Image (tube, rainbow, N blue to C red):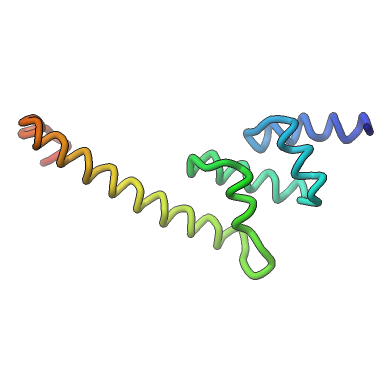
Length: 102
């Protein structure tokens, strides 16, 4: 292996919030370092894997489109979690008078 590529993958892994092996795999699939960094950033923000996020990007959309899609799904997930938590508190007889519900 090329030592330069190994060193680059190490630095890129830190910036993309992932491990060197994942970066090497993505580079071998011809993803650009920029795409790997963007996917890593969005993966961290959304709680998804870098592979699932990078797979959302294609020739007909931009990283901004991917971010909007992730933001929408994250907002839906948070809304569903809040709703489930709210119901669970009431089912157990707790949750009344808490500032979160006011």
